[in-house]
Image (cartoon, rainbow, N blue to C red; front, side, top):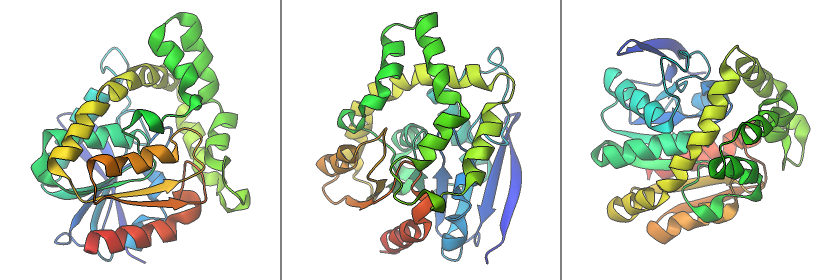
Length: 284
């Protein structure tokens, strides 16, 4: 079993926690998690890839073990999250790398790719969306907040921060829910329950509108640079639909799209299959 190191990086005074595994001279792979998770979601994937790749998986700002400064000291926007992760890659010496993006990791990683296309060797998107047709009706309450950022619409989104909703995110669309470890959603709920975390997440729900606004720019990047692209998708995802995975082929004709009979957190049930798909794709 490859060893995994648990480290902290000082990113201009901002502590970013990260997991690291693999040989330093191997091809680099950056793993970016989503809501409401942390790098813990890659606990089953990293050991399956660390013999071939140098892997780094940070906790995004405000998530997991990374710093969670107050909203007075740090504006929780996806631009700012991407800026911290961009500097993080420079601090740890990740100069050229493939990137695995999931959920919130997608708008973060796609921002990095647009800013530094020369650094990106390939993209793996696991339920990481960049197309309007990929957004399900599950986004309607958040869309209502974008249209009318009222107190009532903001408060209505608190239901998305409960343990019940987190468990549902992990288990919806999974044929055999006994395969889903409770460790993931229990840890996520712990982090969501920290003082101030709720308001941070509500801010990010509101700012997700900026990601949708950047979809045309992301798509232009795909068309212009055509990075090697693999989509590995839980086809029963209640938030990001299979049409969003297929849409990547519109801008990157050589994109590879693979669906798995599972939900949003596909690694919980299909880590082995996804690891095989990634290894085959990146080595090729």
